[in-house]
Image 1 (cartoon, helix red, strand yellow):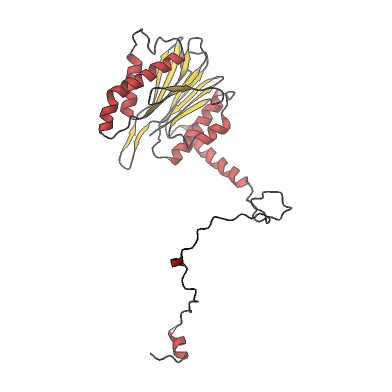
Image 2 (tube, rainbow, N blue to C red):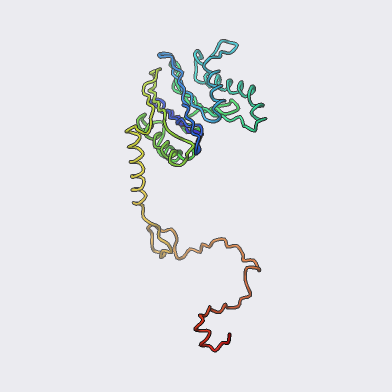
Length: 292
């Protein structure tokens, strides 16, 4: 499994991916999930993949080399929408070639991709591409996409990111999102690839591969955990069964009539209703005159 996130902002784009493909006691694989298609001054595109590695690699190879009957390919299309169609067509090509054989071995055709970038004078655009080759585009209402193990890192992104967010803020948020995922899921692992693209540059502007020794990421991991704990401890505890006039931190009040849904006790578990006599020691038994 993996975790990748792409963000489309007013100032440009942010991409972050991990590099783990297998995770077990004795099997850990590392393959980079981010590929850059760059022709400086003309286009800069980023493709990130999650799912079956062999499928992802086959799709990437087709995208990088193939042209259609009209001579169009990833290196000469004039819009990001057409670039997304090129990737979608490559997904369908690999599906036609591989899906049946994979199914016979009990393996699903599983792949998802994020494609983003800028071509010429067109604005930055971001797409998510599915296993069927269809895709959707990011808009201001949903300015980012996640693929892979997305659930752990989603809450912080939902609270922070909007189109006006600066690139450095977005990169910081992406790293915190990744840290949350790393802490909760062994199938996501270092090193990470982080690419930040400034709009209109038409070339990679900032890129770093992050391992466990990276000073900034180590600071993120330590500081985020400490401050999250401080914020948690600063929130007041709830008040239970509060008096009706209480207005602060009331979780339940004395005039509430909340009750749990109780399961009826079956007859065989009720017993005969007789009180059970307490156990006696040997001394107590002899004192009572019992004969043995």
